[in-house]
Amino acid sequence: MPRMRRWKAPVTHARGNGTPFETVALLLQGGGALGAYQAGVYEALAERDIEPGWIAGISIGAINSAIIAGNAPEARVGQLRRFWEGVSGRSTAWAPWLATLGLSHLAVNPHLRGAINQMAAGQVLMQGAPGFFSPRLIPPFFQPDKTAEATSWYDTSHLHSTLESLVDFDRINARQTRFSVGAVNVRTGNFKYFDNAQCTIRPEHIIASGALPPGFPAVEVDGEYYWDGGLVSNTPLDWVLSSDSRLDTLVFQVDLWSARGHMPGDMAAVASRIKEIQYSSRTRAATDMFRERQELRNAFRKLAATMTPEQLASAEGKLLMEATDPARYNIVQMVYQSPNYEGDYKDYEFSRQTMEDHWRSGYEDAAHTLAQREVLELPTDPSGLAVYDFTSPGGGKS
Image 1 (spheres, rainbow, N blue to C red):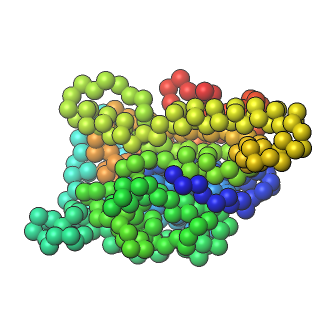
Image 2 (image 1 turned 180 degrees about the horizontal axis):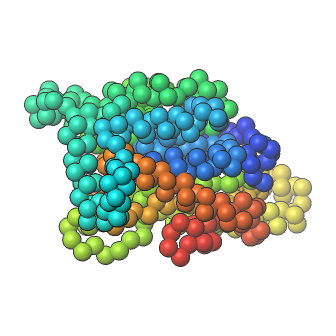
C-alpha cells in the first residue's frame, strides 16, 4: 500500500472527545443488515459524549460512517435511526404483538425465531430493502453484456438519494472529522481508501464501498469501477494504525463477524461459518504486528537518547526518527455475537424486529465495554498499546 501523506487530525488534545486521549477513531466493519449493531454502539458512545475525530468504514460500515460524519453530533443518532427504520420498513417488530397476545415466550424460541428470520430474509431477496436496493425485473442473463444490469442482481441507485437525504457531504469535506471508506478496484484488484484528507467525498464513494458482487453492481468513481472493500479487507484498522498521526488515539473497532466460532453441524451452519471466517477482521494479527512496531519504536526512542546530534542528523537517523511515533493507543474491539438462530442469511435479513435486536445488542455491548475503567485510560505498557475486547467469550485485555 502506498504511504499516505501525513495528515493531522483536527482534535489535538483531549478536550471535546470525552476521553483522556488526543483523538478517538471509530472503525466500522462491513456486514449488511448486521450494521444496526454499529448504530447501537454509536448511540452509547454519543450518550457519554465520546466524540470521534476519525470515522472509517467498509461496506455497511461506510454507510453508517457517512451518516455519523455527515451530521452534527446532536443529529447523528436520529439520522441513523431514520436510515435503519427506512431499510427495515417492509416489516414491523413482532415481539410486541406476541406480548399483547400473552405469547412472549415464543419470542425466545430459537426454532421459531430462526424460521421467522429466514422468511424475512427470503422477502428481502424477492423485494429488496427500501431506499437501499431493489431486484432487477429482468435477470442479468438477459441483459446486454458489460452493463450494470448484466453483472448484478439488484439495483442500488436508490441508495444515492437516500444518502443525499441523510448525509451532509459538505460537512464531511470540511474535514471537521477525518473520514475514510475502502473499496476494491475491479480492474486491478487493488484496495483503495477514499479519504477526505486526499479527495472530495461524494455519494458514489460510499456506494462503491458497499457494492458487494454479484448482488450489487460495480460503481464508477473517476473513471474506475469499484466493488465492496470487504472482498479484500473488512476493516479500516490497518489504514488508521499506519497513519502516523502522532496523537494518543483511542480506537473503537466495531466488528459484525466473529473470527471465533464452533464446528458447524450441518450445511447451513457451514455456510454461516464460511462468512464469519471470510469477513472477520483478523484483528489479532493486525494488533500483534502493530505491537511489534510499537516495541521497535520504543526501543529506538531509548537508543536516540544516547546518540550524538550528528548521528541523529544523518540520513539514517532522520529516517528512524520519522518512523518513530510516540503516540499511545488503546484498541477496543466490540464484536457482534450472533445468536444460534441466525443463519448464513443474517447479513441480508432486514426485518424491523431483527434490526431492533441488533441495535439493542450494540448499545448494551458498548455500555458494558465503557463501564470497564481501563478502556478509557492511557496505556502504561512500554509499547504504548493496549487491546481490549469485553464482548467475546473470555474477553478482556489481550
